[in-house]
Length: 293
Image (cartoon, rainbow, N blue to C red):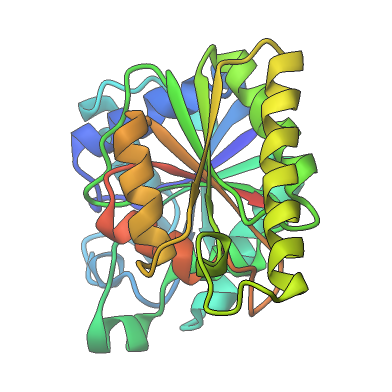
């Protein structure tokens, strides 16, 4: 699987870089499939103040050298020709994201790996969230990791947080394929409406129809996994807690190494994309694979 890894120099510790490289290695058959990309914008003050270098060096060879040093320090082997510096004179996070996505498209990448920094308050309002913007604008899948992420040596357990929506069957088949490739067991989690468990209006036929539809989907998932000879369990939770909190609890109970969610392309995203993905990364310790629909 061709992958683009967005890596900013001097911004990640060796453990995170090594962990991400090891995780990406489980999705790609060869190191030749991996390219590192860094979009140089107007925000990188440490490059603009490197006055001992020429302008051309500051925004091309210098950041590339920094990235190669980070990779070497983290004991990650990657050919220098696979590290690409993309200069883009902009203050816009959206424009920078689009530049990276254009590069990924040129490489025919199927996966984009990103670190999130969990910016809050005024910093997030001014700088914006690169990873969050990528979730909304990317047409290829994303692998996201935050500052608290624990990187597994081997992915042996995957939690798929499904919205049981129209595209869920297709996404389930994709998750099954990944599980088979990684030899990982699967847990499918769904945050159902509270009426799935109880209601003040038990005579309402719409409530019973919802329960039947939800149960039918859960049964279909179990059947599909059985056909694929894949160990699987389905967890339905109808609680007043938030979806991210319930998903993280389910991941913890399943001893998951990776969480998979889905998100639609566009500024509003799907229920399981956007804010839910961001909350899972911010409050959890799991790498998150985002399927783009």
